[in-house]
Image (cartoon, rainbow, N blue to C red; front, side, top):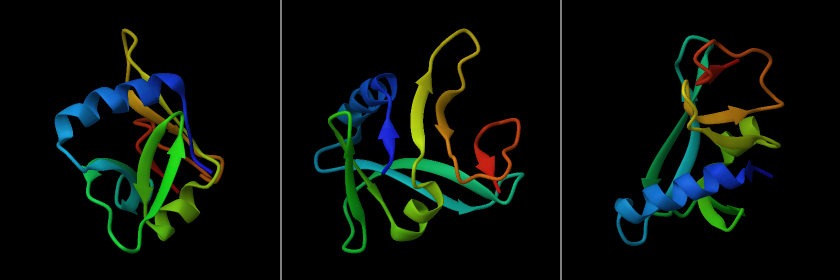
Length: 104
């Protein structure tokens, strides 16, 4: 299960209205970043192999591989003075880099 905080859900809903009809948030993991893997988010149409998940009233997409890396994660949004944007708290990450966007 992936959990969206209320702040993250609100921001995603705001961004989704600009993304276009029929597009959902895609959350994914890809090779790269300073720690080996990095998180990514984009708006996309559902593919046959996608898992469609829901949290805090928001439907979003993940592929099986990304879901395996992120199972149990929480996605938050920080818009404070030094806000980083979306933050992912992943209990499966052995280490993360200072930017918060990559992990191993």
